[in-house]
Length: 224
Image (cartoon, rainbow, N blue to C red; front, side, top):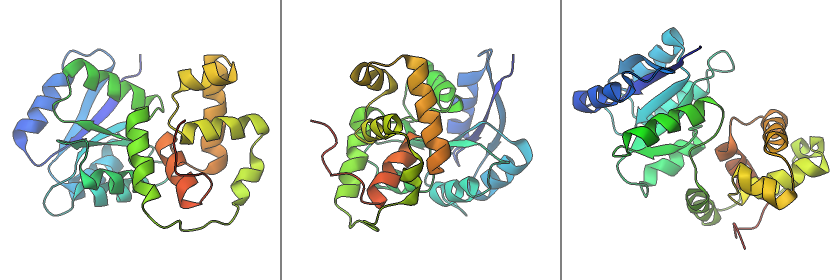
């Protein structure tokens, strides 16, 4: 069984040790390493090649947002998914981290079992954004000017069904909700979502939301 490799990044030793202890004894997860700041995190991703990076935001030398941006720029050879660790879900920096390529965020006081599940979800390609959190992200982008309202050629590659899935993803629907709304099987929805990632050149559903709003493709109301 291949284990999910996790890199823990936080400038506080107690936080790092606590997170490390969380994964002790979890059969399918191993802590590949730790880092105290963003500079160390980027180097660790290059050398250790983790699957998931748990990233603090406020750190010396290089903050978590900058480190996330650097990691996500490394390319396909370094497919680590970054999850932002934060104290408050309303942290204003979270949105900037998501724009930098993070696959979601999780609160530092999240229960152990949920944290373990979260790492598994991100490693499998999901994003840590519930519909309510997606709506917060949508509201944030709705307050900002649209960067480009021109049609994007990437959408021309999508089938009609993929366009339907795309619209529901942007509105914050989970895979289960998409399956019910479009009367599709779970595996079919997952396949469509993966095709969207490939055709639009994005990493996960967080980036799909950002892609849509930065290109002026949807209205500001997330769900009816």
